[in-house]
Image (tube, rainbow, N blue to C red; front, side, top):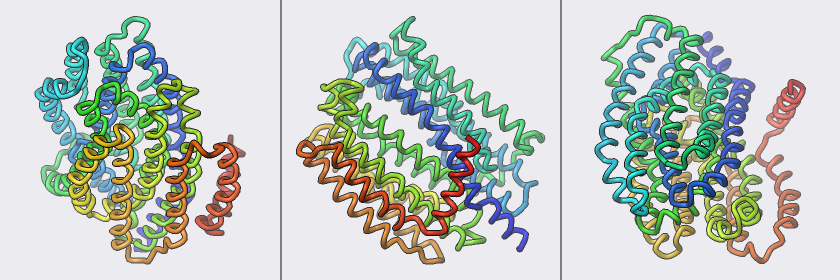
Length: 504
């Protein structure tokens, strides 16, 4: 037991988690810069309608790895648990059984997507001239789905081993090519299937790179493939609930785009999708933290619940500390930024959308920590049931909001759902923890910021953005630093930043 305790503490120590978080964050900055460069060029050369279709294709390529019956997260959890208890001989069957299951799921999804592609294309309001391109593009997307899902499994293995340096490098390469590869096609053809074909090639290359890294660094993958049918039942039982969240979650996150394309137009999708793509890049911070915390929660929640409570508290306070100034910046400078980037017409349509979505992303950040803890505790059914309850209510709210306020209404509905999601997830996560975690100061500070940010959006034309920004930072940052970050954490954080600065 003492050996297991020391092993768990070693694998969840603050310095290691912080280092892995920074690795994750670095790997997502390059795609953000690439998106800022590529999107204006793509809009100009493809036109608004084709760019809207490309945005939908990005969703498929970027997120179909989530439709894996939860096998990726199951593999991370099970491998992390075996590493924490030093049962390394049981890891190989988990890896090979999980990868085989994900490949089969990918093939089945590919066939289903082939069948549904014509229906999807007909449902989207696009010009008649783009019908043929849309059909061909969706068939190419369907073909690459097994590769997308298998890649998610390989990444899950590396994350369980906390090899975030390798994951960072691969994801950075993928993220850059994801946005810049279409630019390389434009001089030869603005034809959408050509662009999708190149993106599919990028996905295939990333898959090969993940295989190489896993084969080289993960010892169980060098062994003879060992499949155990007995593992499939617990994997699928645990993963089935995760898959409900994995399917419903992205559907609710991205359903608004498809809904706008059906009820309004593809042009409206372009005005909505652009600010959505920009602010969604802020979730790279959340992803960087949560991807590191999930293996740590899996290691500690059963054997060391007090350790899990400490990690949970630090994760939420850190994300609130980071997202409050980021959200303030986006709200005050949204109109100026979009005008400079894409012109005044885009700013008139997209700035209010960006502002409301920014609040939603800020609310979602601490909720993601609670989401990870609940699933690591072996209760993915809870997150799935919460999402199942939210889905019909969100669809009704989205319909009413879009009917009344257009794309701004879609952003409002999305943000309201993020708030409800956060409240429910955090309440249940606190219930699961054996040790009490106090969030009174964090809750009060967060609530005040939400109220202030909402007022700024409603009355933004009456304020001097730069002056307000300076005043808010002068008052907010000290409050965030001293109220959210504990004294020992401040010392550790400053020392950690100092060490990284010296290395740089």
